[in-house]
Amino acid sequence: MSTPVTRRTVLAGGAGAALGLTLPGVAAQADDRHHETGVGFTLDARTLDGGEQVTSVTLDTRRLGPIDPAGLTPGTFTVHAKATSPIPIAPGDLIFSEYDLDRTVTAARLDRHGNIVLELSHAEGQPGGGTLGYILSRGRNVRLDLVYTITQNTPLVRRHGAPLTITRFVQGRLSNPEVDAFTHHVSASGMKYRLYSPERPPRHGRRPLILWLHGAGEGASLPDDYYDNETTLRANRGALGFATPEAQRIFSGAYVVAPQSTSYWMEDGPRFAPLIREIVQDLVRRERVDPDRIHVVGCSNGGYMSLKMTVAYPDLFAASVPICGVVEPLGGEGPPLITDAELAAIRTPTWLVTSLDDDTVPPESNTVHAHDLIRGSLVTLYDHVVWNGYQFPGHWSWIYVARNDPSHHGTHLWQWMARRHR
Image 1 (cartoon, helix red, strand yellow):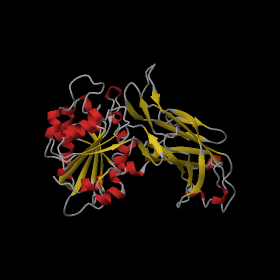
Image 2: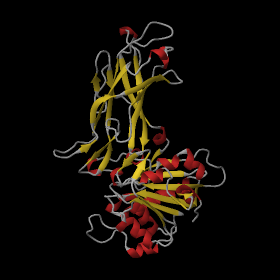
Image 3: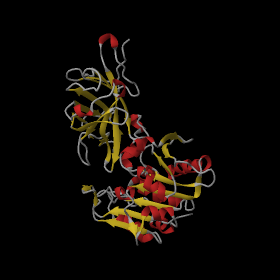
Image 4: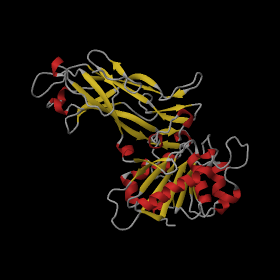
């Protein structure tokens, strides 16, 4: 019986006996009639500060019998990756981060189950491993269609039995444990969101809720019928940071919710505000969320929306953290997105963050201006965005919040938030 081939089930031929087939969730089986040995493989991903990358490939080899790890080298397999846009790109338009190349295998090892893990070269700013592409005309990140082709170059040495050559490789799912810990949901109004629930929610008592509002690039593109509920967790560590063991310890367990805009928050903040509140109120009803410990955090477009939420609902949040938030219209034309009177009326405890070299949202007329007007607010101003020795664009100051770096008189941001009650 033949297998239907679509854009997402592309048969990619490789050298020798290698084939790559994008069939998520389908395990390969050996064809004894033709003496073939097939295995499935998983793409292992991590969301770095600069976005998600495929960092290794795991081959499901545990059923092939004990493999001698001494016979595994980085040259045993070759890994080729092709990444293309999931939606058509118009003539003259640009998409950044598509690629078609060989990935460098830095190590080959066995995991505790007997599966072969091929570690791939990856780093901040290194091309050829990302899972997202940025479409210039849309101003959107999209999840790329990934086709990986595995080629075996030398036989596998087994502790028992003859050397083995795998004749067929079947691509499975993209696995990112941090992202996968967030469940998928859709609100009654149709807004999609992801939810992280703390381990072992208490039988009695309630937990805080952290609302993460994404930047413009992570919204949907409805004209393209693209609304994936994925890029909010894969473009940066904004929401993921609050689900780490460190953050969960500081907050004594917290829910983290990340709604996805159907476009971008600044398009119509007053329209989006009640849709976001609906999600928050529903979680308070359904989950063990403490209504007095709801925090809002957002970056760029989401920084604007964080401020807008505290303007629209002054009694909803225990704390607000707008990161490189937009107050004045970009380009300087038109009325302010949030007026001086609205900023001056904010009573929610607020900690603003930005980098002074931000050339996307000017700090002085936005973050610094908001800090001057919001009574009692705190502000952290960085000179540059540098983490682990790598310098990011100045607009990416959310990296510091996702790492709990901002501090005031020895108190770090997450600890400050955890102490806030409405």
